[in-house]
Length: 238
Image (cartoon, rainbow, N blue to C red; front, side):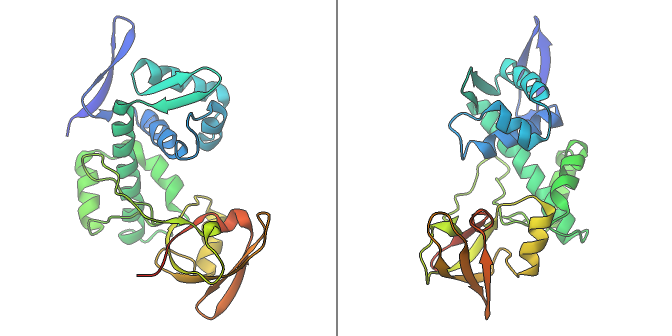
């Protein structure tokens, strides 16, 4: 697989190939892709917050990405990936999630440890390493948190699930994804046995974004609305 290289040509950037040359730019592109699920145009403030950088740093990177044709920036609205940017972002997401599952399955790290470790490792993993990690991890289709892994052509598998807060009382379902990166939240979910694959039942829901009572096995748990929203489920149980 060729790399998508960014090179200067008459004082502007051009795109050649498939994968981004800058690992930092790959991480930005991947984050824009994730945030597009919630925003038609991703605000720079939201991108800066999720990348844990200053607004000035995020703006500088977006300017470079716009020059390279990776994003389209609409003033006062935000940014969206171009078709080239989306393909590059999905390959970056594939690498990130393969590294995560490799760290858990092969190296024995906890699922609460791997997100930030992967950010640090991402730039040092080339295609040969990615392919070997994929093989050694058992050719996974999901990351440790249940997120689907794009295929080698940059295509994202479809997942038919929804947030737990959308379910009615007495609904039985199976956890598909745990959409949290914060280590303390992941450790808490693990303590409650709320991992991908766990079967749970919504016992009751309080109105106005109130807490959700769920049953996992024979034990009831009460989750605040924001925490419950991190659990995505497939329903009904197959």
